Image 1 (cartoon, rainbow, N blue to C red):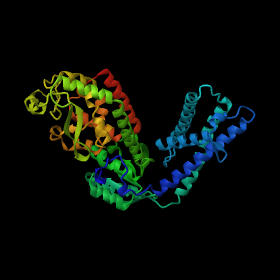
Image 2 (image 1 turned 90 degrees about the vertical axis):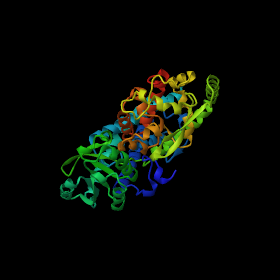
Image 3 (image 1 turned 120 degrees about the vertical axis):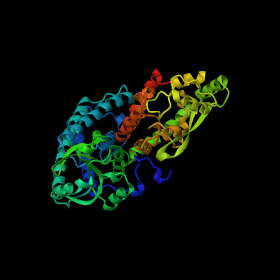
Image 4 (image 1 turned 180 degrees about the vertical axis):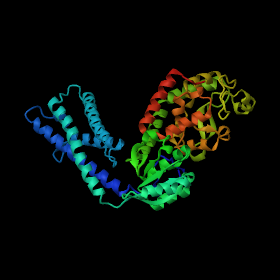
Length: 473
């Protein structure tokens, strides 16, 4: 897939600037602080428990720098969780320290469950477990407080943070003056809000290499399709004034900036690695599913061929990532010439706006087709599309070209990400959604709030809905 055709959630290597220096050294020092503090906590726990039961030998697979394998595994998962929850940003608030305690507690409790499944007869020393748990929370928070204090002293002596301003023409001068009054910020570039989604503005941001972008009055759809994810891939923080915050409110951190209430949106620590994980999971899952479900595929193929003349599979042109047309695979659920009869059925379309074509009692559906649609088994061949990189397991549904011809301009935002077999739209109403605008709003919500955990939630909910047969016909 060419660079211009990548999913907006992926890291844009062509324009990759690297993390800003401030973010780099801050994250590095905080990571070092966490590793040292956990090391101190475990040494204290070992000292306090030297007269009691030591760590069972079955849990010591190797030793490095005087610490057992369990310690290094715990450190790895701690740092990963902290990074996922953006605890290596420059924000220094009380709720972040509470989050630290919460995540460490979750890890220790999870370790109990894992140790049980690893060896049900394993006798984990309780004194060692609890002393390591509570000491880790104490030392990590203390070391972070000290590290953040010194970082604030260092940053107070650094050059001002560079800011790129995006706002309506009548607000650019006002906001520039407000930022100029702040000694620790400087404006390096500006653009009009109506051009925020354009490639020209994006190239200007790249040339200016700002550490933050301050934006006001940016249309929600444009924010979803371009600015947020492009800045995220470059490691540039985004500050939104309240008028622009609706679409990405869940990601924002409330903060006062130049006497203005803003929402600061941190760039992801993983910089597109989470999207690569999504793609790897798509490939591995689709390969496994195609192999394991092959007997079911053969049974469905035989049933389709036995119930009506024609091929077992149905392929249709759909619009995918960035408007690229591809052939989607499905099990055939209608008579062979169904597409030729659709024009005569348009007047019976049950959607409110006519963009999508839905008919609860479609005369073209075959007897076996009704069952396949009710169980959603007709969608299974799309695992082939997932394997080829044309679709994902989760994403906005790819629609026929007949539907896309009726799109309004803002509807095309959904094509900025890879289409999926299931999505937020499918688990939030499926065929009961009659307005395409409502469906697109769900797609935009998915794009703006995307995470690996959200994909997992959608997959689990999809399985539940399919098993219950809700909303399908």
